[in-house]
Amino acid sequence: MKKDIHPEYHTITVAMTDGSTYETRTTWGNAGDTLTLEIDPKSHPAWVGGAKKVSDKGRVAQFNKRFANFGVKKK
Image (cartoon, rainbow, N blue to C red; front, side, top):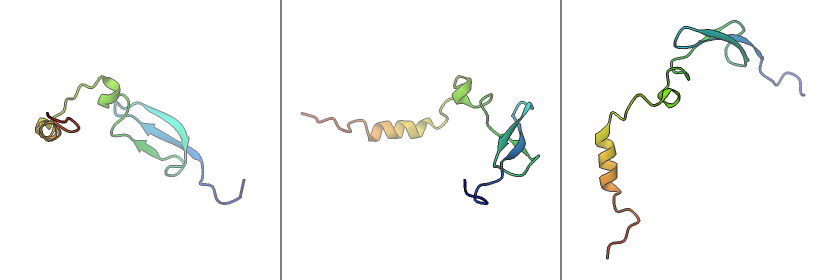
Protein backbone atom coordinates (compact mmCIF):
# COMPACT_ATOMS: atom_id res chain seq x y z
CA MET A 1 0.00 0.00 0.00
CA LYS A 2 1.08 3.58 -0.58
CA LYS A 3 2.05 5.49 2.53
CA ASP A 4 0.22 8.60 3.80
CA ILE A 5 -2.79 8.36 1.45
CA HIS A 6 -5.18 6.31 3.59
CA PRO A 7 -7.45 7.84 6.28
CA GLU A 8 -6.87 7.00 9.93
CA TYR A 9 -8.79 3.89 11.03
CA HIS A 10 -9.79 4.07 14.71
CA THR A 11 -12.40 2.97 17.29
CA ILE A 12 -15.57 5.00 18.02
CA THR A 13 -18.74 4.39 20.02
CA VAL A 14 -22.11 4.23 18.24
CA ALA A 15 -25.17 5.21 20.33
CA MET A 16 -28.48 3.71 19.13
CA THR A 17 -31.85 5.44 19.55
CA ASP A 18 -32.82 3.18 22.48
CA GLY A 19 -29.69 4.19 24.41
CA SER A 20 -27.64 1.05 23.79
CA THR A 21 -24.09 1.50 22.53
CA TYR A 22 -21.41 -0.53 20.80
CA GLU A 23 -17.87 0.06 19.63
CA THR A 24 -16.78 -0.20 16.02
CA ARG A 25 -13.81 0.74 13.89
CA THR A 26 -14.21 3.42 11.25
CA THR A 27 -12.64 6.38 9.47
CA TRP A 28 -15.45 8.69 10.70
CA GLY A 29 -14.55 11.38 13.27
CA ASN A 30 -11.70 11.00 15.72
CA ALA A 31 -10.64 8.18 18.02
CA GLY A 32 -13.00 7.96 21.01
CA ASP A 33 -15.84 10.02 19.43
CA THR A 34 -19.49 9.00 19.84
CA LEU A 35 -21.74 8.75 16.79
CA THR A 36 -25.36 9.28 17.90
CA LEU A 37 -27.87 7.80 15.46
CA GLU A 38 -31.24 9.45 14.79
CA ILE A 39 -32.57 6.46 12.83
CA ASP A 40 -31.34 2.89 13.22
CA PRO A 41 -32.60 -0.66 12.54
CA LYS A 42 -34.45 -0.66 15.89
CA SER A 43 -36.57 2.40 15.01
CA HIS A 44 -36.79 2.68 11.21
CA PRO A 45 -40.13 1.53 9.70
CA ALA A 46 -38.37 -0.49 7.00
CA TRP A 47 -36.93 -2.82 9.65
CA VAL A 48 -39.68 -2.82 12.28
CA GLY A 49 -42.60 -3.79 10.06
CA GLY A 50 -43.59 -0.49 8.47
CA ALA A 51 -45.67 0.87 11.35
CA LYS A 52 -45.79 4.30 9.72
CA LYS A 53 -48.10 4.87 6.79
CA VAL A 54 -47.89 7.27 3.88
CA SER A 55 -49.00 10.55 5.38
CA ASP A 56 -49.25 12.48 2.14
CA LYS A 57 -52.02 10.50 0.45
CA GLY A 58 -53.00 13.47 -1.71
CA ARG A 59 -49.70 13.26 -3.58
CA VAL A 60 -50.16 9.54 -4.19
CA ALA A 61 -53.70 10.10 -5.49
CA GLN A 62 -52.44 12.90 -7.72
CA PHE A 63 -49.71 10.65 -9.14
CA ASN A 64 -52.15 7.78 -9.78
CA LYS A 65 -54.60 10.13 -11.49
CA ARG A 66 -51.89 11.68 -13.65
CA PHE A 67 -50.38 8.37 -14.78
CA ALA A 68 -53.48 6.14 -14.77
CA ASN A 69 -53.43 5.65 -18.53
CA PHE A 70 -49.68 5.77 -19.04
CA GLY A 71 -48.72 3.20 -21.65
CA VAL A 72 -52.33 2.05 -22.16
CA LYS A 73 -53.81 2.75 -25.58
CA LYS A 74 -57.55 3.32 -25.75
CA LYS A 75 -59.52 1.98 -28.70
